[in-house]
Image (cartoon, one colour):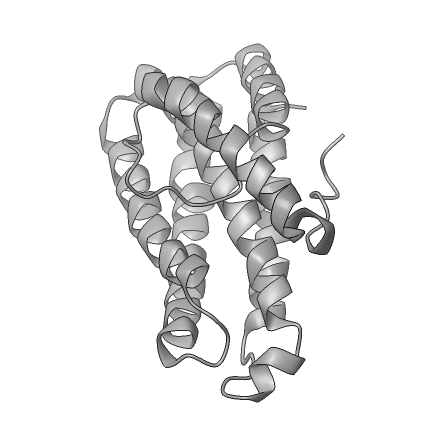
Length: 192
């Protein structure tokens, strides 16, 4: 599967989560609603998506088109990771949790629109279909072992992410198994 198709599927999953989280209950109703499980799914999906983009997609874009597009996208992703960390650290019913959720949904929709409307058309014009296929394969493989938590303090550098990111991913997967988070949050249906 080529990189754009793979990323489009990821975006579709995340946009579906955004829709289900629009108008999510707050206060005492948030606990009973299953909000935490849905938000955990969002944190996992976004953490994996951003990690693999920063490892494989943005370096290819940078090589083909220069620094401007990836720099802006990575800046957006770093801002998103900070907000995701607030969700990771919070609990449904807490005011900041709900503020962070609404902020992330807004940022996420803006970032997805930037990628799809601005970046992808230029990428498809500049990078061959064969190369996009190779990048897509790398994205698919990397997602299976990507971090499941935001790690906003890890520099968005491909070399750092391929080393420190792998160690963080192992810790994330162990934490998920130990806490039962992996049972509540099934793997992405697109994963093979």
